[in-house]
Every structure is written in structure tokens, then in C-alpha cells.
Length: 167
Image (cartoon, rainbow, N blue to C red; front, side, top):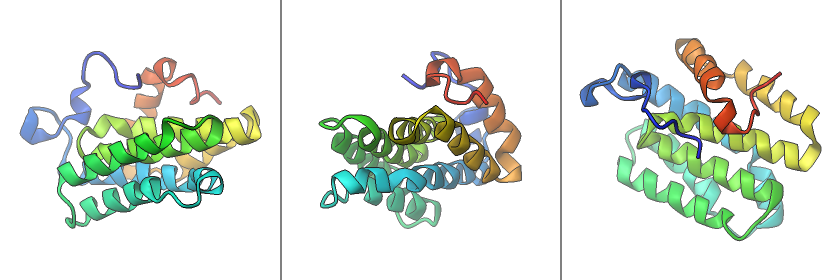
């Protein structure tokens, strides 16, 4: 479980009583998609004929552009996570990263799930040091507008995200 028991209002949109702007929600989704896409090859190397995780990443990017509704993006995320269920190791984690990225459209706090699963995928494929490098790579790509929010979220949820955000 990568979500906290109590929802952080910083990841709830303003129209639902939180403080997250639509623009920052879209930035979180794009960053999550970038994290997931960075490791997608680990899934595709094992399951080259399964388009579900890549479709999830493409769908959340389309949601940001207004091409898909939230429900479509959430469904694509579910399909990507379905692709993960029968797998183990790096391929499984990479598919989960894609699924988590897609569901950011529904619940913004899934942004950290996409990042954490991507780090887990790299750790499974290449070891802990490579996982740390992946975490640094992700942080380098954080848009300035959401940087402090995500870094604080990593600090607060590191324990429930398998401690992958430790340097």
C-alpha cells in the first residue's frame, strides 16, 4: 500500500476541498509518466506483445492534454496493473509503475507509487546502487513547481514505499 491512511490535502484538488491546482495535478501526472516510461523496457523485454503498460503511460499523457477522461485513464492504469500480476521482479514492478502513473489522473498521490515502483524495477534488474541512481534521475526531472511537494511526500511516505527514496 503506497497511499497514507489519511489523505494529504496537498494532493487533493481545490474543487474537492484540497489545495492542489489543476496545473500541478497535470505536472504530477507527467512526472509520474516519465518515471514509469523510463523503466518500461524492463516490462517490454519480458512481455513484448503486451501493450497495456505503455498504453497506460500514453493515456495519462493524453489526459493531461484533455484527450481522455479521468475514468479512461484510471481504467488504463488498472489494465497495466493487471499485466503485472502474473509476473515477478523488474517486469512486474515496471508494469505497476505504469499503472500507478495512469491513476494519478484519479488520485494525485499515486505519483509516488509510479516513482517507487520504477525504482523497485531498477533495483530488481540492476541492484540497489542502480535504484539510487534512478531516484536521483527522477528528482532531476521534477518540475520546479512541484519539486518541494514531491520531495516532502517522499520523505513522509518513504517507509510505506519500501524505503526506496533514501540516498
